[in-house]
Length: 177
Ligand code: IMP
Ligand code: MG
Image: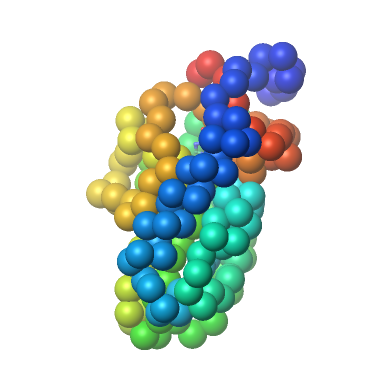
């Protein structure tokens, strides 16, 4: 399915996004102070959010990147999480902060929580998401840090795609679903 740029409705500007990223970072800074944190960017969607977020973090940070996919068709979750690349260093006794673009059904987050729990005894594992789409939640996952709570919209831009397109938009828009 294809959409035209004119069909994308405006949601959050670059300035609003930066302001929100700073607010979220301030909460994380207050929580961890000078403790080291392993920031895990869940590719591809959270590439922009993670890149901006870490610039405002003040504790020692190590960045890791994993790649998962879950979306089957353009706008509906397949219900299955596919681990494209999930190689991680030893996270035993570490503070782990998983950074997501959006939590929708929560299946991706649940998959990650289980993966981390099954492989490591971390000091702490937390979730940070730019957007939380609670209406479709199918798991008990509650993110620790949330940028925006959104309702039933399919959002695109700032890392989020529609059929692989529009990740590069500097703002967030949406299409009616
Ligand atoms: P979940 O496993 O259903 O929570 O979905 C997580 C993934 O689905 C996110 O990391 C996104 O990549 C994708 N996703 C969910 N909702 C949207 C949306 O509104 N726009 C773009 N991608 C989305
Ligand atoms: Mg994604």
